[in-house]
Image (cartoon, rainbow, N blue to C red):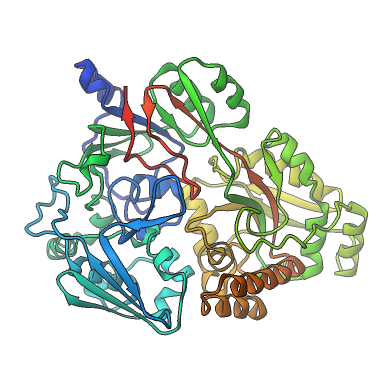
Length: 535
């Protein structure tokens, strides 16, 4: 576990007591019932929305941002940027007058500048950078994108201009650095931690330029933030305090929302949507799901290295039953590794039929006439793409039993689940999924299936040269039609080799208190708290 010390924390009930001292104070405290504890607050180290909500979406900013509720790029800490014609050089012109947050553990002496951008990226790409040497950690998202290899240099041209030079072209680069892993951290704060011999505190006591200042954290209970009084975009912050009430049980989250203990919750169960719609104190927002849930096959483990075994497991799964039982109909069957709303989706591809008899024949051809035993990992938390992984695992377990495959269901605490699967690759089959992070097809295909991601978000640990070459070519061209053809070809390779079985694209529902105004569902998942007002 990356969080190794606790801080003086005010409990959830105490936070509410303080906020109830006056009606005006209570009206400006937003309580968010989150589904799990973050593994840490240094967003560069993580890939899940649980961690991003607590870190990137609250404390930090990026050079470029996604406009709330859209896939459109908008200036962040960079007011503008330039791209060379060959898509290898990117120059960012930084915003002036931006302040880093002042906390009990850090008092900044200067404004944000180019030194902070250079430090943020150099510690991720240079293993000899002093801070990284003192506190060696992995940066899975950056590695999944191949930027540990492709970023040739990050150069300070002056105090407010930074140039990135890539080894090979990447037309998606600006969209990628708008993502949470690229949250800008303070070089001055890092230097202080290094001098104090406490570099690990960058993950436990975060300091950013974002809308909210981290105050304290009681693990598995409460995270508290205050509005950042020096935030450069202060007009978009309308609440004084933000409280995360960590509530893993979805039914309890629903109760807290209905009772008014929370004004916003994460990942409601499909069964709770109807009740929320009938509750006069609640509003239910909805959106088209930009996500995919899947069961991944660890292709480095026998017998899952055999494509006929993977095809058999794929054909044995009754996807329609999963849609009906797990999602209560609020999802569509997934065929491809990207959702139909993503440009370059290959409409020509079709699923293999649900055919247990044919699946048994494929297993026999693969040398397993009597089946085999594997582990099937099920997430302990709800996600936007999967409201009930345990139930889904039980359905798949039953389907596979019909073809002679025994699946032992395994689960771990969320941070441990990710560490064991992503870093160590301990799983055989695993339930996981993806929420689009930047609106580009490369985010679905490269980040979750590319060779650079086999020690990160590529849960299948699958490295296919033909597939990877198609993605590499697509990153070199700017014409969307040409890129579409390459991504469509890549999906054909995926469908033939079955590194994982796409299961569902979930519809998105967000119940909120009617006291909340201005909240927008993000097509990229996660929750943002700027722009929200409270009655």
